[in-house]
Length: 191
Image 1 (tube, one colour):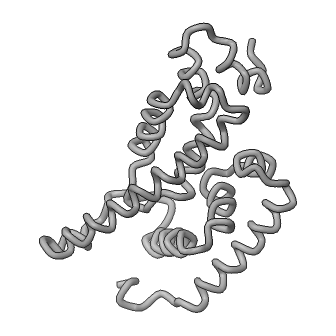
Image 2 (cartoon, helix red, strand yellow):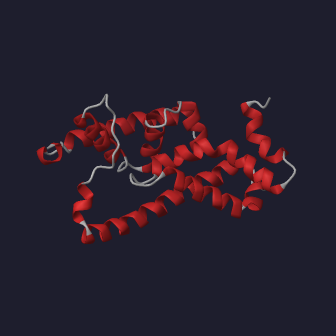
Image 3 (cartoon, helix red, strand yellow):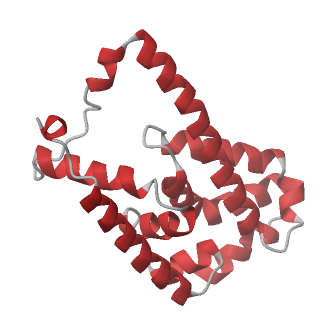
């Protein structure tokens, strides 16, 4: 049975190059997903972004295997993939806005029977505003709030001390609260 600590090094224990890349991906896929979730545009599909990161890992597998810390490489690639997708989405939104403005008002079909519409909209609004925070505050805040990661896990993913994560989350929450208060939801958005 493989321990969590062994799991991080299992990518180097495999004998075939393809096996090493596959094991490296399996060992790090969850936290790559967390990074993508913190940086991806709202409309982006997490699985599509994960696939793009995985394809880049396969393409550059030999280079990555030689690195002392493939996590840093994977994090950089994940952030870049999310940002690139965001730029492409902006262009698509402009095209859609010109061609079919009524499409923007159509619901995406997500619903939670326990939460009422106002709570869902408030949560979406908070998430949208959180995405406007500076990256150093946005990433740990979303990893904690959306992915439910511990401070230690976030510190490992970001490569910073736990105290830094704690400080950034507190500051990020304060900034988000101020944004929520300074930009009250308009009545037209509620109706």
